[in-house]
Amino acid sequence: SQQGEEDPQALSIQEGENATMNCSYKTSINNLQWYRQNSGRGLVHLILIRSNEREKHSGRLRVTLDTSKKSSSLLITASRAADTASYFCATDFIIQGAQKLVFGQGTRLTINP
Amino acid sequence: ETGVTQTPRHLVMGMTNKKSLKCEQHLGHNAMYWYKQSAKKPLELMFVYNFKEQTENNSVPSRFSPECPNSSHLFLHLHTLQPEDSALYLCASSQVSGSVARCYFGPGTRLTVT
Picture 1: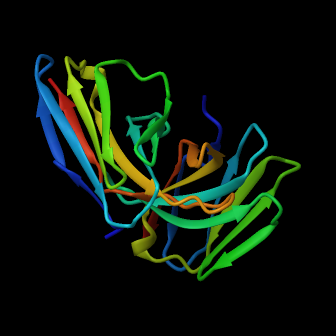
Picture 2 (picture 1 turned 90 degrees about the vertical axis):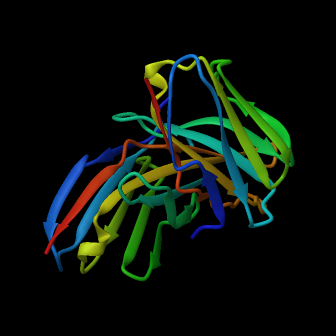
Picture 3 (picture 1 turned 90 degrees about the horizontal axis):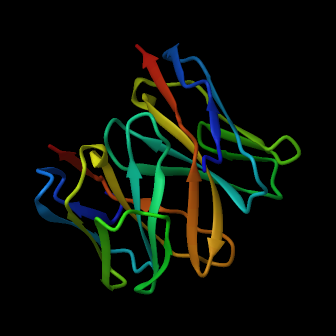
């Protein structure tokens, strides 16, 4: 069953602006991860935030996690045309030594030059 | 380049064909996965292998048959598929350390069933 829902489904902004994407999930989590996918390609891991963390930074990325609201947000600052991609949140569960990711629908981000 | 390779990158097959997708990871990870990405649906986990042992089959139809001969290679054997099986099939691997792991994905195989 679908775990995460992302909002908005599509976002179009001008280069240099900040982009914020939100993700909600339904059950308790181990960690929450964000991935990026360029059109029709594989996913690339961006950032992982643990359930006991509230905020994490990586370069121009900032992720927040609110476990009481079961939600997370991804902020990309000073966006660039190369940031155009789909962004997915995924909750993860470690079971029998392997990792199960449950993805949201994703946000399609377009950065206009 | 994520260290996970998939072949072929594109595949067109008829409903009566038999084909196989191949995945190889060069990262020394213990776990490998098949995910399916269809249009307008979230990525779906299909199969999970940990050190060659299948630990999860996410209610996948038997026309999809996985094989993991060793911890670096993963196959997905396809037979008598349906047009609705057309999708992007993604292989991934990870190394679980405690409660933390990140997945490395291959570029995917774009499958079209005619």
